[in-house]
Structures are given as structure tokens and as C-alpha cells.
Image (tube, rainbow, N blue to C red):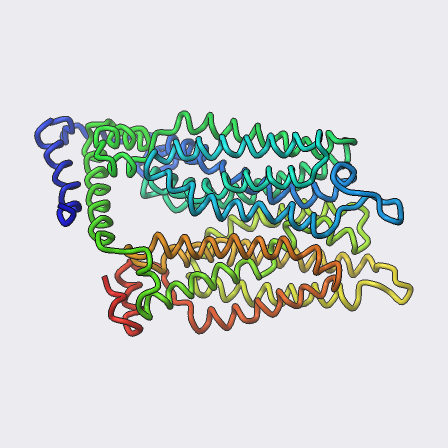
Length: 519
């Protein structure tokens, strides 16, 4: 019976459509005279639906954008820190690193486990579950104001991390499955854009509460706002139809037709909807057939699969060890030590550069290709990082030990250029490369492993940065510079160009490694 499963999906749909007569192929409606088939206006409903789902990326970005500045607020230090020998409120670097970094452990766990609920209960239900868990984590965080226990706040961040990790897997998948083919690439890219928007708005929030508020309300406000973002996403999901791919996987073909009808503004009995359902059924049958005899450890079998896994994992690790989150998480504390009166303004500038550059990143990956994009990014970021590090290590302080503001300004300039290179190359490019490396048989587990390595690398960077910078200061940048130099060599020698290639063509790139790489 198992051998016939791929045929059964198509057969059941064919019987349904031919015997019920529910899909009338003669009723395709022509587009109105003021709206062509490929205009954005024709897809306005799909764009609105996908935007509501992509807003989950804003929640992720909000955390990245707020947490670094939050832990540097005087009110936060008074709530969870102690008075040092100089009678100044402070938080241990170990505690600060844990509070910031454990979020990534939660993300890794949620991405690997909770996201599986999307196949059983549907994409919408999985996101609802994630948002509910997220809200619980937020409550745990702000209620720590009553206990004054930093570890309670940390536990809350682990819980919210689990939710964000799951949504970071499910939301892009939901968008990809729900958006019309013509605008699918742009809609998936919208998720990354919302992450950078969240980072920028988080930076602005930190600056605002620092300037206009005092006391516990200062650090509580960015945390309370997390509830607002969660409710907004829930309201958007309420209007969003379930994924037609999920409906087909459960043999709910009429529901799939209704979903496609809503997403594409087409009659449910139109030729277009009928054709799209058939395509999904055919694709699902192919996936079932390819994965029929696959096992989770197949990704470790054969030189071809091992090489692909190694490349994907290395690309994800190099993305984190490029040092981007060194700036995103700790920008406020880093630039406070270069003599700036308000380093929160610098964080906003970096967030703005990151957000604006993301628009170019969507274009760069497609125009330059995957390999050239990563190589350009490695070289550009290396030059910026090593210059920034040299200035901070050897030129920032004058003979009297005072910070030179002109050098500090130069460091900010090179950091902005660095952020531009990251946002246009490695930021989006790493995930594109990993998504295109694997065949259907090993794709799911390979991407899960590579993505988990990305989260854990993020954890290592965010956890260790406060302690390392406390010992060697800006010289940590030399470590990132070395990693960027190695990444350039790695990309040049090992990363294949996958732009425009079908899955079977990517297989051919690795066929010399091992015949088992062929489907």
C-alpha cells in the first residue's frame, strides 16, 4: 500500500474533479480593463494576506533591535543588577550575555520541534500556537519586575525564542505556499524586510524610552509592546486563508480550491483554480514519491550528501561569524565607548542602513548570482571590519587616553558600510544558497541541521561578546575579520552557483562526488 501513496493523491483528486463536476472549466473570467493579469493591483488580496503573515518577522526583528539597548538602560540595571565599587549600577557580562543569547537557544528548539505542528494541524494553527506561547513568554518577562530576578526574565526570553523559532520556519513556508507564482519571490522577501523593519523600530523604541521615560516603565514599555505586535499578527491570520498545499496534503481539495480562489481573486470554479490545484497535487505526489524510502540519516550517507551538508552548515556558521550581530546586539554599548554622547542614535542609524539595504539585497542575489553575492559580501565586510577594528584598537584614544571623536565617527561610517554589505549579500544570500543545495530526499533534515547551526552560532556570538570585549575590547573584530577572510576562500572554492538551476541540475553539480546523489 505504501508504494502506491504518490499515485493515490492524484487519483483521489482526479476522481473528485471529474465525477462531482464542481470545477467548471468554462467559467474563467477575464481581467478587467483597468487591471492587467500581472499588475500588483490584481494581487492586492494576496499581498495583504502575505503581509499579515510576514509581520511575524517584525516580531523577530523587534527582539534583535530592542534587547541590546534594553540591557543598557539604567532602569534595567537597577532592576536586575547591582551597585559596583564605584557606586554605579551594572550587570555582570555573564548575566548580560545569557539574557541576550538564550533567545537563540529557544529559537533553535522551536524551529526543530514546534514547527512540525504545521504539517499536522496546519500553518495557521501552528502560528496561532506560536503566538500564544510568545505571549506567555512576554508575560514572564515583564512580570519579573516584581521579583527582580534576572533569571526569570531570561526564562521568558527562552519561551519567546521557542515561538519565534517556530514562526521563522512556518511563516516563510506559509507565504511561499499561499502567494501567486508571479509575486512569490517578492512576498517571501517581504518576511526578511519585516525583520529589518522590526530591528529599526526596536532601535527607535529604545532611544525613545531612554529619552522620554524613567523608572521601570522605561524598560517595560518595549516588552509590553510585544503584546501589541502579537495581537496584530493574530488579527491578520484570522483573515488569511489556510495554505492550499496543506489542504491538498490532507485531501481537502474543495478547501484548497476555496483558498486559491481567495488568494488569487478568481472564481472557485475557474480554469485557473482548477489548474493550480492540479499542480499542487502533482508536486505533492512527487515529494511523496521521492521521500517514500528516505530515512533521516540519508543526509549523512554518500560523499555528495555529506559535501552538500557541509557547505550548508558552513555557510550558516560563516553568516553568524561575519560579526553582524556583534553590532545589532551590542551596538549601543560598543559605540558608547567611542565617546558618543548618545549611542542609541548610532543604533538607529545602523538599523536604518540595514532596513534600506535590504531592498538592494533582494535585487543583488538574483542579479549577481548566489556565489558572486557571497564572495562580494565577504570581501567588502572584511575590508570594513578590519578597518573598524584597527581604528578602535590603535587610533581611538589619544596620548592622554581620551577618545578621539573623529576616529569614532570614522568607525561608525565603516560600520554603516559593513551593514550595507551584509544586508545586500550574506543576510539574504546565505538562506537562498541553503534552500537550493539539497534534493527532495534530504532537503528537510539538511535545512533543519543547517538552520540549527545558524541559531547556535548566533547564541555563541551573543553570549561570549560581552565577556570577550571586556578583556580585549575592539580586538574581537580581528576574529571576525579572520572568519570573513576564510569565508571568501571557502565560497570561492566550494560553494556552487545555483542561480536558475532546477533540483536535478543541482544534483548534477555533485554527481562526480557520489552516484548516490542522483535522484
